[in-house]
Image (cartoon, rainbow, N blue to C red; front, side, top):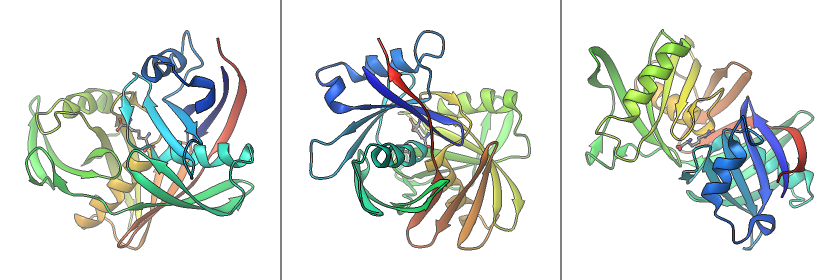
Length: 266
Ligand SMILES: N[C@@H](CCC[C@H](N)C(=O)O)C(=O)O
């Protein structure tokens, strides 16, 4: 199987063409390919499909679970399509499990793409109301928990502790709360300026990753709703760099993608 590997701020993905995996169990393939000991190693598996009128992203997490959207993966797919001459225009659209999203290449070297993600949805499906700044207790520790759906579900907690141990422990525990019967990614954020937050995400289907695009969008919009940050353009800091999130009526995410490798697997 021919593959290319990409990352967006260290959130890494194996990208393959739909033609090369037609008829295969994609969930099982994601599990095999993403294994860091016995596979290629990645946080997610992206199948690039050209079956329809516009390109389509089919996305699986490292644990084999399907997901509707992945922000960093989406930007990586944009670069994959560009590298393979599958998109020629600066502006284009890609179908995802969360709908058709418009994108525009705004930088060539380094590659930079701006993606329109629509509006954040705040009505929480399990409780039928918004889950914003709600005090919850998790193993004796109090959190102010908020949630938003930005193509995929996200919980957001503002915290000064961004240590690996804290994220690993409470990310998994918050994902297991009854509010989230289908699980959720959990974003831990620290305010670092009027329009700046630092974020570390515990991702559903993966665990702690180096960056999360949709999590950055959810965190920026919730940070603004809670009055913790302000401004149209929010800088979301990750270990390897920043994403710019515009949070007007519609959310826009601007960030890069990097090709790491290509080859054959199996
Ligand atoms: N890495 C992502 C989000 C991926 C989805 C997540 N693992 C889930 O299951 O919801 C991003 O960059 O947006």
